[in-house]
Length: 220
Image (cartoon, rainbow, N blue to C red; front, side, top):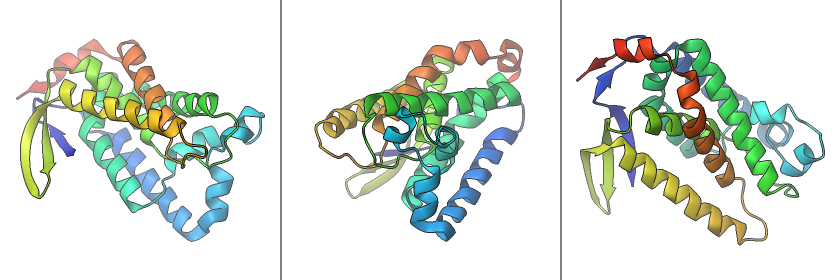
């Protein structure tokens, strides 16, 4: 298991204002979840059967800022901070924001399409972050990611190529999806959303990029 810390191959030329703002919004919404409890989660998370029936469509947007617990939000925000600033720098704030939000929407639509009869709430920024990772894989496949690596009881910090790290992550999502589909009532972890978001990011990232901003980045 590895936790990405940061890209050591380049330094963004601009401050990641949108990435930081997204992290702050996710933290704020998580506090609202803690206060509102189960009724809040049921109201604002994606329930595939409802969305498939044309109901509560706003949840496709709101659910991408919600999380199922402390480890869920911490893990997602760590991955967003590791890969988001470079992609924001490559696209510019407005394009990046559109890319992130569209990635999240496409991710949840993929989950709804895969499990249209499910009444289990689905929530999380994972689909949108998967889009960022898919875009990173296409834009900076040769970059090196400083990673906290767990090998049983042994913990170390090492450098892993972005393509390898993201490729392993994506393969795990596919494997998890196969296992989830085999169950009668899978949990609220939207594995298909991960796959849908990742595919969206990998396919569309080039359309959102600004080549002049990429050229302005500093290589280490």
